Image (cartoon, rainbow, N blue to C red):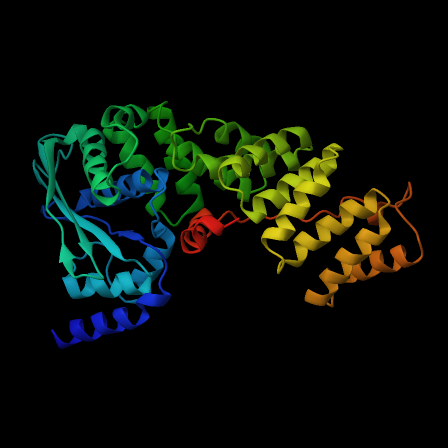
Length: 394
């Protein structure tokens, strides 16, 4: 009890510097004796996570959560005490935690038959206040529908007055057959790339309306630089998927690497219209530049205005000016690059060219295709910043 009080005091002292209302969703605990269905606890947490994130609720990412569990030495499927839950929450800057359990009445040998009961609760960490219990029960084969209904109830509790109706929410999250759901979750839990690819592909094959494995396959193929395969999977990600914007971001990168610069611009523009992050605007401007779009300079200037600390943004703006023969403007941006990264040889070389009044010339491959893309998509961090800055945020 003394340890819990100490943790709570630490949380209160750090509260003024904490981020905005943020939810941590823990894997649900398996109360049954059938340990081969532990994956259902991860399926529950994943569904709740994606449902909240899609509606703009700030959440701790699965990777960040799992890293915290590992660093704290907490087993993934442990039935945690309230003190432990608070410790995890403070480790990831969460202000509320969603956790719960599930139980089944079925034979361990035939997990798809029988009944399952899902229970969840929201803990307000700052106020040490436990919310009401949420419960759903039904046939195990209806796990997808049951966890979606539970996610809806948790979402409305986390965000009262939500504009989306329950009917629309359920329509946007059609039920997924149990074997496809299991294959997808086991793919998330696997540490083997080949197993991930096989399990996600199996999930997508079993359920054509299942968007999440398509995103994962697109992401994995992109990381392997198999851009054509990545594009095929990413285009199957549904607009209702919480990964839709990230899939469009990856699609932009994929199209860029396939030299479809107009298509890349279109993908980045879709993301920028909803989340005008500097990295997205930077990539949009780069794609526009390669496509010959005269709006590239203005777009790259927006990225610089939003994040003046990143030298790559200054470089791309400088390079766009230099390509257009606007040497004075290019010089100013190149000096900004070198102020931040004095070791940038390309910027120093381009600045020297500007000083000699030398713009781009045909047949100089060393000065072609120098644009710098951003490959990391971190919408969560951007939304946290927006929540802190409020209406004045860019």
